[in-house]
Image (cartoon, rainbow, N blue to C red; front, top):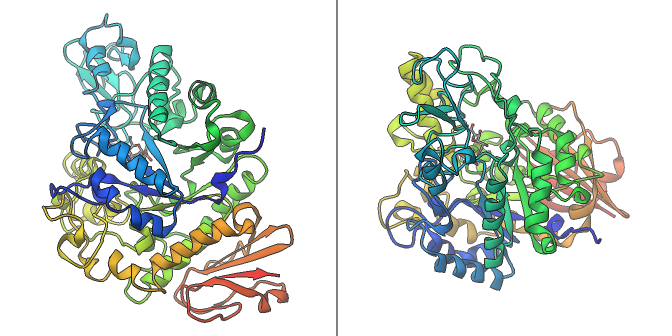
Length: 564
Ligand code: ISL
């Protein structure tokens, strides 16, 4: 069969619907709001839109807790609106990829309601129910079936008083984990997925999909220093049956129609070696995965202990992924999403002097790698982290649970906890998209569900679109270049200068074309010590300063040189 490669020259744009555009002034973004921005997306030039969850949900985790997989939450609109969105995207030559959240459901999903109803429920085994640890009374401290910690603080188990048993929730207590060992669970998920494909969606971004296979013994994990609960990840990251499940899903859902579809598995903790197996087209699992190594380099142990990134670590990591998936499989490329802070604040320089330069440099360095780039809404405007003042300004369950645990249970100083969570918390990227310089950045005429970044007067789409040298225009050019140049979509990759702490440098080669990419991750001038003198007179394909300057890099300079 012919290699499926359309997505090698494609760029995906992530919409986090809550914060994208509000059409009905209730302060929350919605589907009609997205439909109103299709011209904007078309102008940017992206090929695919990945839409974060819009299904019915109690919104304990902003829609990643789903209570009906086959309906739209009224907060976001209706199924008719979704059909219109699909038609609007398809009419402009773009595809729609939906979020698939099937490691867990909401505790308000009818499957869970039925499962919890009694120990003999026909759906009891659809979730992970366990009695208290032997020798313990249900509910007493230490009585949880194992010692795992939830990703959102506290134990990964919740006691159901009525039956005296606990259920597993790797995330919030309102996100019980589905038991994929049960074939009825798998068949129901596949049926739901087929229903969406029949409706016209073009694929799925699969939430924590490498967590679905768990060691059924659910053994205790290693205790973490100073933490009340332990690390269970060894029992579910790329667990025993994960490849079997993904191949079965492919067979049951995608087979026969995969040519035009895109599938990407979100996989925290995935290794390069596993990623090759997940993405080798011959194995028919997924097209690509989101790996987490490069977004784990600027903190120690947990994201609540931020450290400074060393550029050499970033290059070593991304370079290893480029090499590891060079022959078999395919990389996704991302700096940000709704779970990560804004990249310009994180790896660039958000000061007025360097914000645009560094945002463009980061974009250029990422997009010219081998892989499919993902743009998170607002990244193309150079949006920055949010200066939240107090804990009351935050909305994310992850932050709020952590703050409560750290201050109330562990007795830490609230001011210290607040300062430590500022750089990497998820709400940084969840503030409304800044459309114009008007009230609420043009996101809503109501009261936004989370604060708007105070820099919207200077940083907004209207201003960005009006200028040829803006961050937006730079993204647009990068996307066009990927469509046009085979060396970007298909070329091989060689990392240069692995020991340089400031200059990111690599070469792409395809047939007789060569592309040299240079990014200065600092505010001082640097010479890129690239040995081959021929590069000195190569043609500049793209840069973030108005004029070409060879291998001498100015502050935060980006340059891509092409030869012949
Ligand atoms: O951001 C994280 C916490 O530090 C990650 O562990 C994150 O929870 C993980 O990447 C899984 O993310 C996905 O599943 C979560 C949801 O909260 C995230 O928004 C989603 O992207 C549970 O569904």
